[in-house]
Length: 212
Image 1 (cartoon, rainbow, N blue to C red):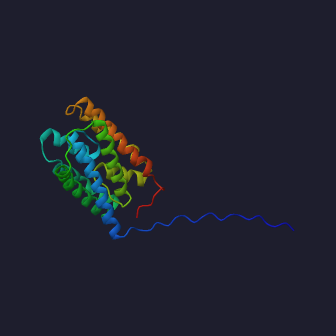
Image 2: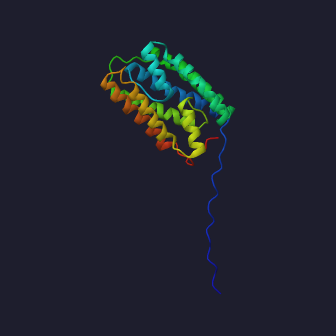
């Protein structure tokens, strides 16, 4: 009598281990530190980025108002969507993250001053810093409000890739700012938006990482 074939047992699906409070606090601080440093570098170089930060840059450059203040206020209308769609934990973490970026983006220039810079290099470094910072926040169920909330919601509910949607919106915002920056700054800003969103698109995919 022949031996019945051995059927391999498929591996058990990975079990998501919730982050504890200390991990969330450390991640939110790290993520906002990286994003705010990228924002400060962009600000010193006269560059733009996308999302609500891009809108804040537009208002900041046009009016002279503090970027941190404008960024905090611009995000206020989006918390209702976050509360209704993403839950109170996500909303609270996002509110804290936005507040920290608003605060730290004004502190970095007191610590780091650029006397000479190449716009494309600043775009590469700043875009990379912000992209990694966003990923850290996303993986701990936080964001920086505004359009990030919308793209994360559409990804979770309808499978639309957050990185691709964010990239499209960001490019539109950067092009809308062409009246306020030089052609070189515009080119560098577009490059920075691409770098930022490539980092998100390549490293934040549904099913690759379970943020709990």
